[in-house]
Length: 87
Image (cartoon, rainbow, N blue to C red; front, side):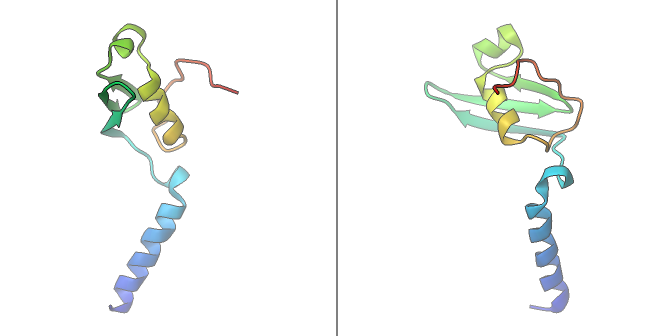
């Protein structure tokens, strides 16, 4: 391995270790395997989507909230909390 490749690998590890604040998700889709079914959750520039029935009615669900908890601090700031945080 040449020295420039080693430097790039070290930088990648540093970026991964400093992910919160350094890496910001603008948009993505993910599948959450729930207790009863799998659901597709999407995030696009501050807006959540989920294909579950609860989300259709309330504009949030356990699937989107799980993703918020998982990715806290790593998404664009346009997101708005739709339910109170558990303290």
